[in-house]
Image (cartoon, rainbow, N blue to C red):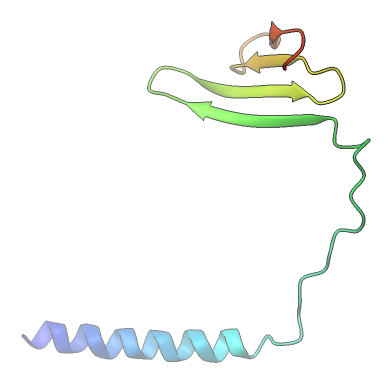
Length: 83
């Protein structure tokens, strides 16, 4: 029973310190990255992972082709054009 009291005290102290430090950084807002350039966003990636294999799919948004890479060797083309 005594240890649960100490956990509550330490949790309260941690929350107070966290809120006081977090609250003191006001005025530092996130900035936008600017206008979206669709010509620059040519590739889309989607990562996957399993017990024995991991990698990512790569979609070329201009040609519609689909590639897959596992980090070993060159990417392998899976499809010429996606519907």
